Image 1 (tube, helix red, strand yellow):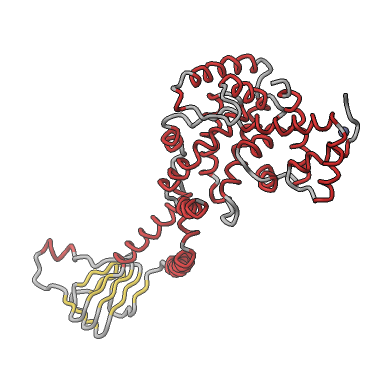
Image 2 (image 1 turned 120 degrees about the vertical axis):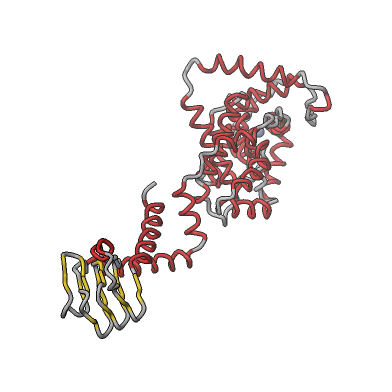
Length: 211
Length: 187
Ligand SMILES: [Zn+2]
């Protein structure tokens, strides 16, 4: 007992998928009334679905979630940064701008490594060291860049040392001479702040690009 | 439920692992069961379900939050099970049967109240048989039958999960039903 009505078969499946228009449904019903083979087939299909739905159920083994969590890859530092950057675009943009700005300043700074003294008359320059001799009085401010400074004489104005430091005159200590160098203005050393900043920036770059 | 998941996923994307723990907990039974039905045995089901969650975590940034998370998760799990089925050695089936039987025996020894009563089928043996028959279908029919009748997804959702056209889903579910009808008609 069989039926070759392929359309009826097709309609049954459409019916089971819930997309059969009323007109087609009537067509199917009419055929089923007449055809025992299709009735049987339709019944078996519906019963199959019921049977499928009664297939064994299982639940995850104990400790499943804990196992998953233990096996997650440790979040890479890089991922953390990337996540953070994505979550904070404005801060990221500001940070990048800051880095570029400071970076630009630094490269300008580094290009300029020659010893520069704001005035040279009466001063002694010995390699990278600028010396204010004992009998010399500098009337105004004194700026030394990329070099150290020894003051045995007198500076009336402010002293600024960029990328260098003020060192004691070794002779002075040895000979215990009374004449101590004098600075009447303020003294400022820029190199320490600079070094600190440079260190910070290097650290930041290192953590960002070298994992 | 969807809203809770959506919130959790936002936190996971920001790097909050404990939010992911909640997500795993909420989906563990569904995903494990799906893998079990696809693979037919518990050991592989556990491995693959674990792997599915780990992949979801690692690739969370590629998940589009406007879509449904469950769909995405089922897709990962389904693809992994199909990969696993493809990689099985020819002599695998013998082993699986033994392993599967062990698991099921353990299960059938559980006290009565822990069993889930089938509507028509009370008999544990029959439930096992049905599970067996489903897991012997060709994978492309198997996944659809499972998603439709055991996980209760609509045909449209299945088309999203498997990333295949709706028409193909319909054709395959028809064939899957016919194949199972032949196997189960004498039950
Ligand atoms: Zn007929």
